[in-house]
Length: 133
Image (cartoon, rainbow, N blue to C red; front, side, top):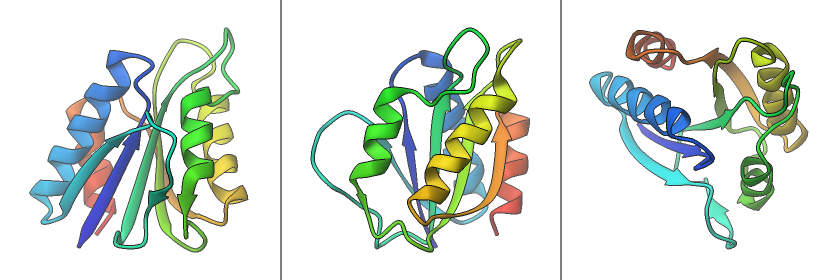
């Protein structure tokens, strides 16, 4: 099975979380492609069985999705009905709000968000990967 991990370049923590998630998925026999939110062209998600989208917590009290992630999601074609995972890197405040905002954005594009997680460590990423079977 094939997975796409689309993640923000806004900070290093989200990149580390994406790499940990990639390793966890690969250990569970997924073929993984990682893609940053940079760029302006369309993002083809058709060949993937799973799309994982990561954003840092944005704002003093969360509740927002990083602008680059929001724009990248709008560039995804055929996201409708696609099995997705939303993930964020936690902060003291706003983690849940930002995670809900990311899930809402994915669902507004028709994605089927079947899992979500604040990824703090490789163990968190591994748990998400286990549930992705």
